Length: 126
Image 1 (cartoon, rainbow, N blue to C red):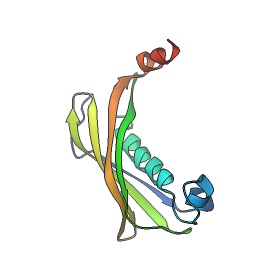
Image 2: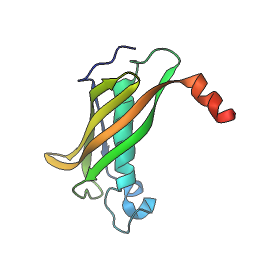
Image 3: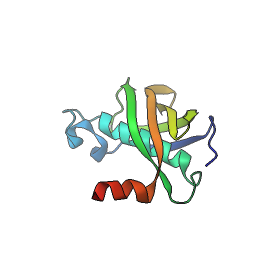
Image 4: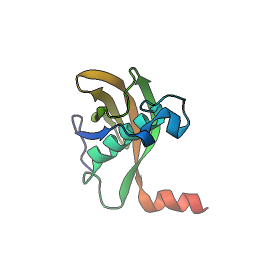
């Protein structure tokens, strides 16, 4: 595994009815739900690591700090970018930002750990 700060990836969506706070149960308004935004941030970190880990390895999310700063209505395009900022052994820290065109929607950090997939899953069976 050779990972270095600067590794990045982006995921984009157009906010749909299924992405809203009213739909996912995190609020009552038809805007992008914070839990959905968090899922997009994690998806961007996973995409950044795609094809970068050794065979048999994956990463798991362990910590998130997300500041949801602005509402995005149904129909709004939202782009979420994750950039690897810190590598500390198996611990990876990503800076994440979400934008609706030029407007900052959210920012924060996502921490992931690189694990051996089989060993990780075996612990769940014990």
